[in-house]
Length: 237
Image (tube, rainbow, N blue to C red; front, side):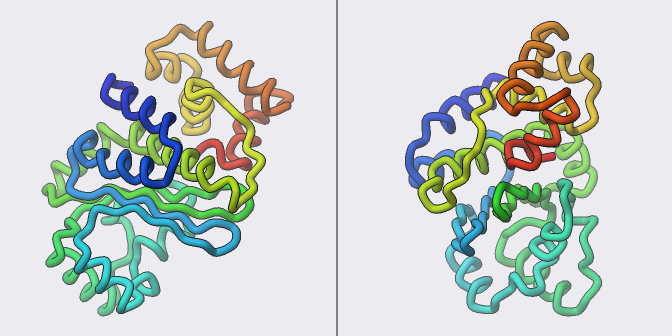
C-alpha cells in the first residue's frame, strides 16, 4: 500500500460527518487519477446516500429519466458479488446503448470499474471509478489498481456505516485496518506469503493480525474468520 493511500485511509478514519466523508471521496479522483468517483449506498430501511463527481446536469437528467432502471452498471452489479469492468456488462439493448451515448456525452467516461458491496442487514453499496482512457490504458490501469480500489471501497463503506450507525443500528465488530487488509487479501485468494508481501510485512506479523481478527470474530479458524467478516460486511471482495 503506497503512502498516499495510507494517508487517505488515515484521514478517512478521522471523518466524523457525512460532509467529511464527501470531501474524502471527492479527493479520491486525484489519488486514483481518474475523472470520476462515485459511492452510492442503500441501507436496510431503503434510505439512499450518494457522493459523486458527475456534473449536476447529468445527475438531474439521470434522476429525471429514472435511468437506474436500465443502467447496466446498477442492474449488473446488483446481481454480482465481485468487482466488474463496465466493458463486461450487457450494453446490447437499444435503451442501454442510447443511455451509454448520453453518459459519454455528459463526460461520465467511456471506461468504468465498479465494486458492489453487500453490507450487514441488507445494505447494498456501489463504489465506482470512471475515466476516458483507451481500452488498453484502462486494462493496464485496472490491473495495477484493482487491489487498492477494492480496499478503498471497503474502507469508504465501513466509514459510511459507522457515520450512519444511528439509522442502520449495525452491530459491526471492530477490526483494525491491518486486520481488515489481511482478511481481505485472503478472501481474494492470496496465499499467506502473497498477502504478507502485498502488505510489506512478515508472515509472522500477518499471522498475528489474522489470529487477532479470528479472536475478535469468535471464529474457529481462518476460513471461518473470513466468512464471518464477509457476512458482517467487514470485507468486500
